[in-house]
Structure formats: structure tokens, C-alpha cells
Length: 329
Ligand SMILES: Nc1ncnc2c1ncn2[C@@H]1O[C@H](COP(=O)(O)OP(=O)(O)OP(=O)(O)O)[C@@H](O)[C@H]1O
Ligand SMILES: [Mg+2]
Image (cartoon, rainbow, N blue to C red; front, top):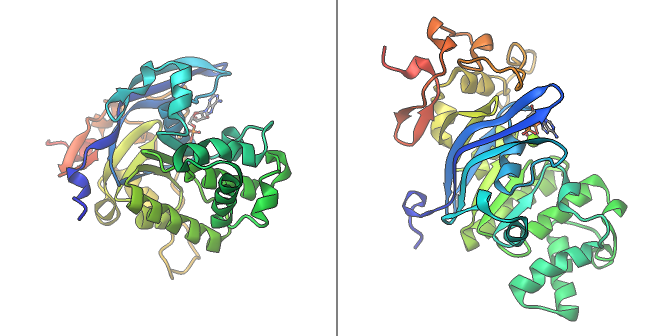
């Protein structure tokens, strides 16, 4: 018997996360006050247009934000109660790959170019399964085979640069599930995979999650995948979560005009594709955000009040929206 997700403790709790990058163009507020929690066995989807801060949110949680730029990383990120933003780099290295597994958008950022695939898989496989020697190699090859890497035994001796982009992504996918983590962060984990492999891999992730009850943060542009993989979804716009709630409710009664536009921009299955409504206008410059709602300039329902920052309002149990439309008059 598994208890309902709402009764389980949160594995990860992010409070008021701010990641501001100081660049030549000004201070980019890539993540600007993001809060959410994900419980054991639960998957939270992160959606939003390109540049809305999804990857930066994931990278901030594991403290892998770009080193080339200075800036602030503030707020709290509690992993089973432990604040990750106060850990030393050494402690973070232990946490990454053990408690938190990551499939990052750029697979090269999770792979070390100077070690073979086999070397890189050794640590998590040995630590979790207590294997060594031939048994360890066989288990690593099995993991590669599970993500459809051809000739897995031979690939263990390969270096990351000897694999195609799609293969690298699958290797990272195999490594992420080598030792079941407490939290899995998957940032567009299947974008470079063929559709059949994509479906198999997503199925595999779900199966592992059911067995090991890890929490998952799942970033994708594909709302069909959100429907399949996630219990809840957070919609990001300009570095903020503008709407969050149960997937079914967000899909059937979205409240925030941005979420509504995002859902309308997806062609219905079987609908004629003669008109695809892209969201009008450009996403804002994150170095020059307005004081009020960042979506106001593109919003079909904009009002005078939108010049002030909208509050986060609970529109239904567990469903929040950051929009003046939902505020009492
Ligand atoms: N190395 C960097 N230096 C400066 N700004 C950056 C850097 N990386 C990302 N940004 C900025 O941070 C903001 C958020 O980027 P992020 O990668 O989180 O977007 P995203 O939502 O993941 O987009 P996508 O869907 O395209 O992956 C963007 O405005 C981007 O330009
Ligand atoms: Mg991204």
C-alpha cells in the first residue's frame, strides 16, 4: 500500500530562490523568487517558453550555475531538510550523483571528457549495488542496454566525445538511474531521442520511481509528456512561477493568461494544422524586467493594476496563480 503523494514528506523544498547573473548587458534575473516542493514519489513538471529560467532553476538547486558569470544565488533549497545553498563544494559533490541525480539539458555538462563511460559509471554502480570487477561491468552494460545503447560492453571503453549527442544523452540517462536517488532532476531528458526510445525511457523512469519513490523535477516543452509523467506542474514565465497546480486542473482550467496562451499554442491532437497560434510578442529581457507583471506587455487581458506586481493567489486547493484577475476587486 502506498500512501497518497499529498501525505508524504517533501524531498525537496525550494523557497524564494533567486539566481541573478551579472553580465555585460546588466543583471539577468534568470530565477526570481521561485518556490515549490516535491514529495516522495511525486513528479513536478516545469514548463514555459525558452529562456523562462527552467534550466537555471534546476542548475541552482544543485549549485551548477555558470561559473563564468558572477551573481547571486539566494533563498533556501532543502533536500530532506538539509539546506543545499549552505553546503561546501565538496559536500555538494557527494550529494550530486548520490542523493540527487541529474539529466541535464546539455549532456556534456554531466559527463567528464577525460574519463571513459565505464569509469564514470563505476562510482554509482559500485556504491549502490556493492558490485566490483566483472559483475560491476556487466551491471553497467545492462544499464546502457536499458537505454538502447548498441554494443554496450564496447561503449563502456568509449569516451564521451566518441558518442553521438543522442547517445550521450542516453548515457547520462543510464547513469542517473544507476543508483536510485532521492531526487531526480530531468531537464529535457528525451529531446534528442527517437520517439520509440523516448517512450521506453519515460516508461523506465516511471517504473523506477514507483519502485524507489524518488521525487522528480521534470522539465519539458512537450505538454503531452507532462500529462503522462507529472502529477503537478509549475508554469514559468520570466524567472517566476506564474501558475502551479495539479496537472489535470491546469490543463482543464488554467487561470493565468500566460498558461492559457501556452495551452492554446499547442495543436490539439487530430486538429487541422492550418493555424498554429504562437504567443504574440516577445518574452521580456530578463535584465530589464518591469516592476509589475512581466507578462503584461503581451497579455490580452491587461489592466491598469498589472503595473503593480501581482500577488500569488490560491485559486483552488494546491492551485496558485500570480495574476490580478484572480484577486478580489
Ligand atoms: N551563462 C549564462 N550567462 C548569462 N545568462 C545566462 C546564461 N545561461 C542562461 N542565461 C540566461 O538565463 C535565462 C534563463 O535561461 P534558462 O537556460 O534557465 O532558460 P530555459 O527556460 O531553460 O530555456 P530553454 O527552454 O531554451 O532551455 C535566460 O534569459 C538566459 O539568457
Ligand atoms: Mg533549458
